[in-house]
Image 1 (tube, rainbow, N blue to C red):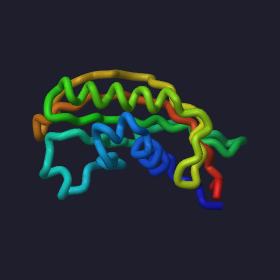
Image 2: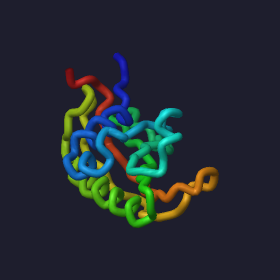
Image 3: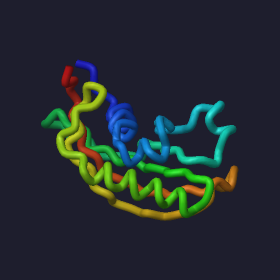
Image 4: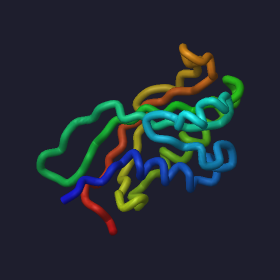
Length: 138
């Protein structure tokens, strides 16, 4: 059995959300922005980072924690994108994306608006506990 990647599923889910897409278009990435995209900042973009979780040994679920950074040209734009991501994430309810079933998402930290230390790009951070299925839905 191949365990499905919930980060890929979250990327697909957020790209398909109309509120997120209206701001960030397809600029939703896992772990980091591609180099060619990073040189075009600061503009709307979402980056999803895996940041831990706890194993479930008896059921085929992955309760994982993800950090989500929402970027914008200003701190207000970054926070506006966060609000669109927040709306999408809180509405996850057994969403099937990229062959991975997303069961729930609960915000556990944030929002915190700041500037990236290396680049000074404005972003809003939030942390989420996401429960995803391990088995493929295909």
